[in-house]
Image (tube, rainbow, N blue to C red; front, side):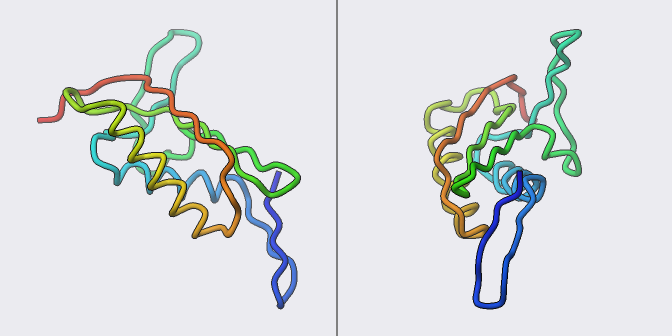
Length: 119
């Protein structure tokens, strides 16, 4: 579903894919996040996504009331404090996506699909 905003100039629609791409870009800038993850259901393997595929690690749902729900599948750095990293991710993504879209975020779920050692 697409988000709809009414402005003085008319109706603006925002595709969920645009929100996913922006949220993924914001997420990988957060401390402790190595990248977005894609899980191969068949093999159960986790793959780290490259920068141009960040949206595949994020699920965006836009309700009829234009409220956003986000699900992140991430890989974190080894040795970081996971609650601190996830709190930072939630706060940063909530602020930047709400500012970017003008639509409120109701829910952010984070799934940690892997840990990676950073050299």
